[in-house]
Image (cartoon, helix red, strand yellow):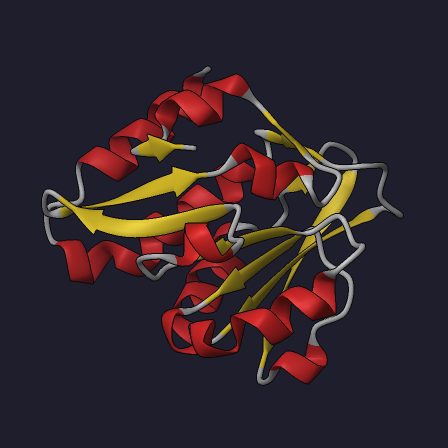
Length: 165
């Protein structure tokens, strides 16, 4: 419960929006790891970031020594969609959204939570999408887009969303 409160504070207190964008997104992604149920892992929980190096840098700094359950977290920065393999979370930066159909093909049949940051991506298949609303970074979430990858999201996370579909 405490982590959910911290997540709420991060989302609703982004005073200098652009200066804090990477920190807010990285913190949210880390907190999402605790609000989604993944099938058993092989001891490593992987978060891939494509197209937003500064989010990768913040996330990599933030997760040092942390775990998801018993699994060690690793963060990888991908230079291109051809590097997409197996990961629990795939964060797709704004400029990579143009290749979203190809990205979805790369994770088809895998238990991957796809997170984006461009308006309209929730309608294109993103599970969670960051948006800027009311001078802050919020997120929208679509349960069916999460479940089609064999994942289950907590009601608490659905309730925190700016919009839930």
